[in-house]
Length: 155
Image 1 (cartoon, rainbow, N blue to C red):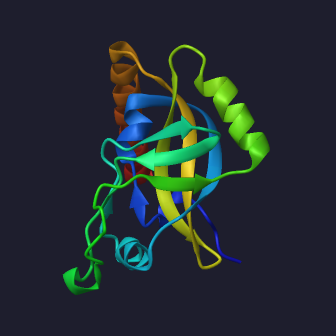
Image 2: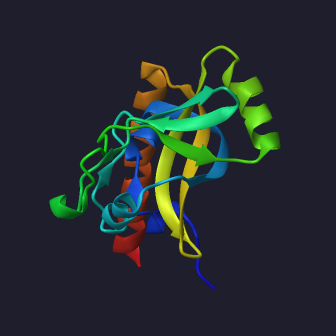
Image 3: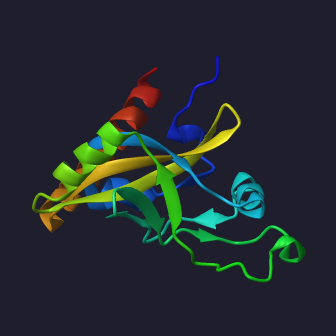
């Protein structure tokens, strides 16, 4: 059985884990054009600065950059920085509207991965970290690395 997690992500937003405290995660489908799917499967996308917007009862992913795999396959009327529709259940959308509307919360994509032949986007409800929280997470990561190094030496 395949394991669907962000270790096998085609595109990941690694800065999201550092800049935000993750409160809740959701899995959403993506509405993409054929050449975009090919490019993402080849790893030709970036999520730096990407975010999720809730408009008129729908979720949209903005700021996703997809570099075309072959320039010849791109249609002439294609808009490069277009927003991508996210497919979520109605219950999930209602919950996201409620929770994202509260102070300090926002929606951020964590990564895009393939599940049963379809591309899925992991979306997280997040709260921004303060500077001291970021320093604390860096210190914690350095301590864990040091402990792992010591354990490896003594074994």
